[in-house]
Length: 400
Image (cartoon, rainbow, N blue to C red; front, side, top):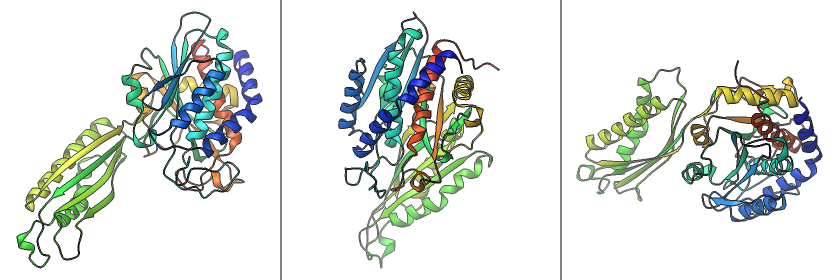
């Protein structure tokens, strides 16, 4: 550990009561995507108390800038996502959700708290680095919102590096996974509307059965994957099907909703094109028609190898090599931090929070029992602080 890392990490360790209290406040006051008004206000209040000027972005997001006092230099972006999920919490604790049917079931409360307190420490030591740090609290990540709005608004223009962390209940508490290359899949959200026309169920020849057409599309959907190398990690999943209103009326309309996940952009485009073609051809074959709508929620998270090696070196120096994980299976879940990395090279780290002594920390994220081992907040806060300072001071290199 270099002298600067040692100084900063001592402050992180001294800050743990405060960061835990902050995390518990956010956990008790969760808000859904794009509705994070109270969360935004709390973040702004905290930043002002640190002597930082908050700015609003993407509706309910917040950003600020910490300017180093050692002269001009590079720019690094540190990001946390702030939204909660429509989940009713079943883990009873002193800080459980006070909002019925809404819960921080993914760890965004922890990421937000860690980045807030990291901002305080970094701002208190701005005389020790050049350049600047752009701090971003992103709304709406759970619905594929926020990242591109922030980027379109120019918040991270000129950035040289981007960095974010995310909690991981399936990773041992205290481990930090920093893996170059694919980490998270792209996420496309499609909706297919099948148009037929109704008739008495006993006279199928007089109608066009949207339920039958929808069923054929669902069954045949997997055929579009046959043209893709099986070594490619691809998932085409259907999550919702509905058609018709009565047992004895042919359905005039059918709805199919689902998602495509993969790691290769060329493969992604091909599958979407092939699937849309299959949808239209199937509907026409049986006398109907179909509309195909797709929402590009996020690209795949592909960690930049140079940025990842830089962050790995910081993590190993500060926490020890036994805490660093450099090889881990990629996840089919998405995260639109991918759009930040596409704007400027970056790395996305997973912070292990699973502790067998705390059963709620071992369940899958998005589960109603989900919680974190709060001792792991120091790893999130520590890597935010130390990597930013190391990078701006040129103390880590991503070169081999």
